[in-house]
Image 1: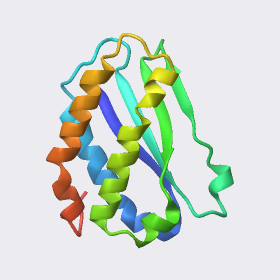
Image 2: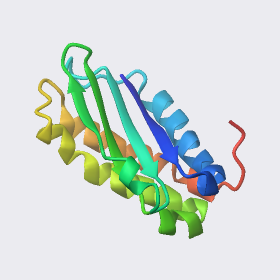
Image 3: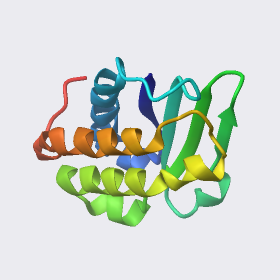
Image 4: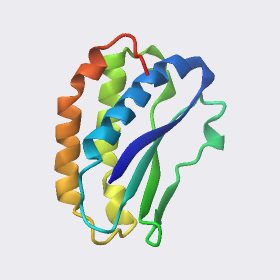
Length: 140
């Protein structure tokens, strides 16, 4: 299964978005050989983190295409908090919001997908990759 993150972030925090890219690359690799049933083959969580003046232009999207076996939805991170956060804090923000967001899968009525197993693997993924929060520079 393909699993990763996309991001729409304000220019003033663009450099801090590198940690999101690093998390996504690690997630792609971790989930590449995993299978949670035929309901989802591509799963993308969009991360929105924009300043308040642009927030109204970025609504949270939720979409499941049974035909394409594609699930995509957005989560929003607090821009003010993100702007002052270090990489460890940003990592924890992404982890917490991502794990909280899994209820959306039930909301979208995704069938034939082992949410419990995926959720457990996602927790393991975040535990295994906490080192990303300690890094200062990312070579992507």
